[in-house]
Length: 169
Image (cartoon, rainbow, N blue to C red; front, side, top):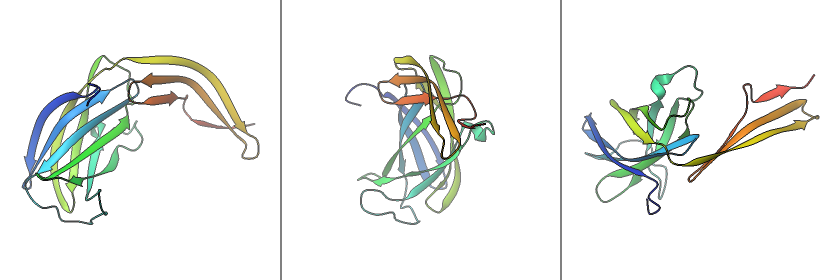
C-alpha cells in the first residue's frame, strides 16, 4: 500500500449477517492479490492461533475446470472492527491490461453463504524474461522445462508448458 501498488476498492456484499468488503487489489503479470474485510458479527469456527484466526473458504474463476485449485482457504486476522484477510493467486488467463477476477466466498468460519464479487485488477508494470531452461533429475526420471518468467513489482511467476513435469524417455 505504501508503494502505491494496490488499487483501492470498496465492493461490499452482505449475506448471513456478515458483510464482506473487497478493499484493494493488484495484478502484476502472472499473479493477482486482494485484501478484504469481514464485519457484522463474531465468527464461529476453529480458531487457528494468535495473529491468524478463522478460515474462509473461497472459489476463484467460477470454478473453471481448466484452472487447478480454484477452491482455497484464506485466514482472517481479528481487528478492532471485525476481521481482515488477503488472497494471492496465479492469474491463469491471457494477460489483459485490465481484467476482473470472479471471487465467491463460500463460508466464513462455520457459516455458509454467498458473497460473490467481480474484482477489478489493474495491470501493474512487469517484465517478461525468456528462460528456455531445462532441469533434469535422472534419479526420479523427470525433466522440468521453464519457458518464461514474469517479474512484477510484487511477485515473480515462472511459466512452463503443460505438463510441468515430463517423464524422461
